[in-house]
Image (cartoon, rainbow, N blue to C red; front, side, top):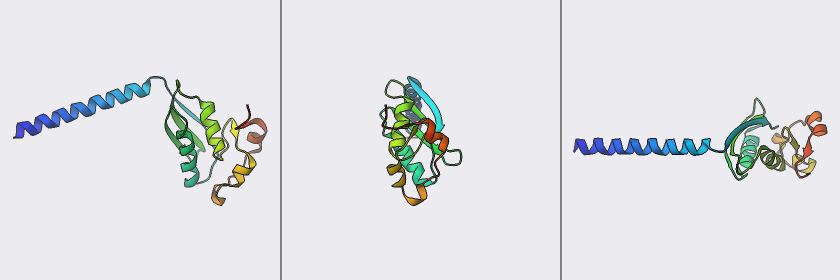
Length: 131
């Protein structure tokens, strides 16, 4: 009985190991990790920003850091690019390094989510829906 339990445990460990190895290898192919600025204020902003990034086909992971005002995104380069991810986030209401949201979307955010906009970003960045 004990040998059967040991055999099952060993088989389970091998299965977990091979699954982890395959997932890691798949993530490494065509994947890129980028970090860029995204403005926001709170936990609701974090949820909205990360959810917007994850709606882009090919995005595997998104983590926004409120203190640093930076998001780290892992995505498949064969499916998307940084510009598409930034556009999706700006469309959701948050200015990014290269794209800004429109005034109406920004003003319609929850009152605690309305962040102070940086004039330099407003002057130098494109609106998310402009080509």
